[in-house]
Length: 567
Image (cartoon, rainbow, N blue to C red; front, side, top):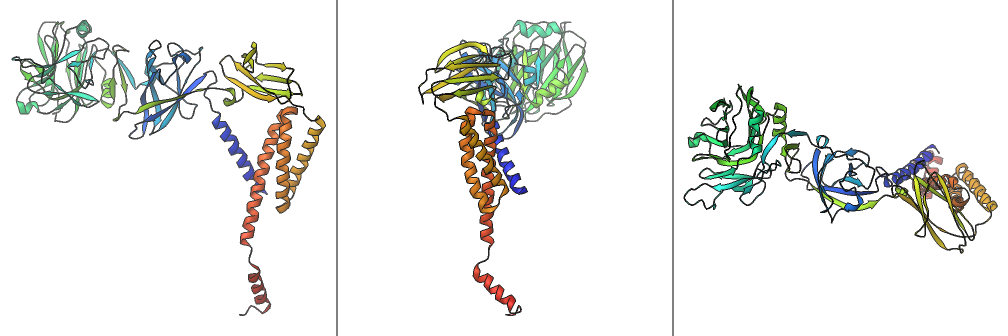
């Protein structure tokens, strides 16, 4: 008996948990949600920044605030709020770009996007979404265009560079730097003969001279090392400002032009470079200059002169008639000296920049291929799916329907619709009722109650003549007696009693909705528990039948025992 009770209890719990899971909704104050599926995932990712792109084909912008302040992202458990940052929200042109930090990602992983709360405040937070936000970038060339002769500056300062074939004889541009796969996305391949990028002078590029601080950074991969060509090569060069390159010993070096109108050789690194990808960086804060290779300090020098102003262009991959032979990617210039921690984060991750957030570098994780977020269909919350915050009861007669409601939120107001027409506006949700009269028997009518957040519940009812209350009491008593018989008997009688109990429980439940609605939940429990009990009893009988020995075998062993146990 104990095992039967445990089995029945487990069955009821599973049914309950299933119904609760299907009714999950993160917050009823948000009217809408969409499921977002993440695909193109090559392996398990953690705390990864996913880009969600919205447009008129996958999102209804009229259902959200005009600036997207009510957007929220929730993990697959529909409970854990995820950090996000809105890069672009263009209500007029129906487009948006939102970055979301997703805790765990595998192929086909799902998250939810909620929106539709006019009272929600902005939760967009770049610092919480990305690994780090670094300010002070005045030039950022990621070389991800993949075609054309313009290298766009995504720092927000507009310092676009032009790709050149430096042959002064024809300067026809037929063989400028080539777009190829790089360290991150695309990069530029320079032939070491006449390829370079020219970035014109600008006030923003002069700003390091005003702060007397600077950081230069680039990812490089040599095809021909300086030791092989016999020439020191320049990664970045600006006349009367800086020279950042690799010498003939294959070591990174830096020259700076001081406010004393003279060049100063700061020094070289200690590490010898090879033909693999390396992130090279230098920083200077008018006190100390540091050389970095692959995120670590490679050399450190004292430097106490200010930086001299200049009006010259910046050259990438050339100085005079000496050109870089290899691939360059992710070039950045800052008007301040980055910290060692910032340089380390840039080496171990990706430096995302966008004109939509000027002078900021958003450090994020990166993998190839990049995961893709697919936005699903819109779902509108109904209170039937969020724990029945509004409860509707009814009293039904031959020619009337009386609906009564109450709400768990004492401050909520509701609008009441009957058959699509509003009958009450801004009524209290704490409790209320509406009487529909002159209803023909078996005539269908629908009431819908909508709260101030547009979440709703509704019921469909038919006016009908109900049996007297005494009939309901008789049904209830009979059901109770059958339940007692079911639990007090065993074997075949229990199975028969269970069948009758199920029938009477279902019949009684039908009328309990009208006469005593709280009792309906107990009847539902009794129905499923009785069904589980009957199922266990049937399985027990089947098992007993299978184990029973055939008659000929019993006769054989009986004669054997009577004969003294001898064959």
